[in-house]
Length: 69
Image 1 (cartoon, helix red, strand yellow):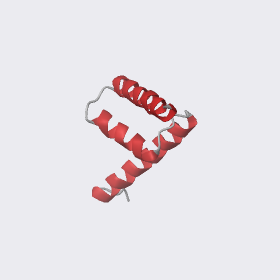
Image 2 (cartoon, helix red, strand yellow; image 1 turned 30 degrees about the vertical axis):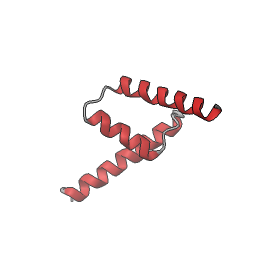
Image 3 (tube, helix red, strand yellow; image 1 turned 90 degrees about the vertical axis):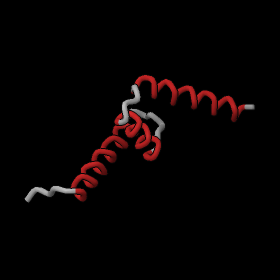
């Protein structure tokens, strides 16, 4: 029997996020599961993925600069 409804949607979403987390680790993105989930939600909401990647990189640069000073 194939599940349907809210529980199967939540299960599918969880499995998809777990797969993305594993891919993220393999690619050494440095994104934790929560940050990755936020990025996915932003992309689903229509944010340009390339622009989002640029912003994440810039935030990392700024954070590193703040730690140095």
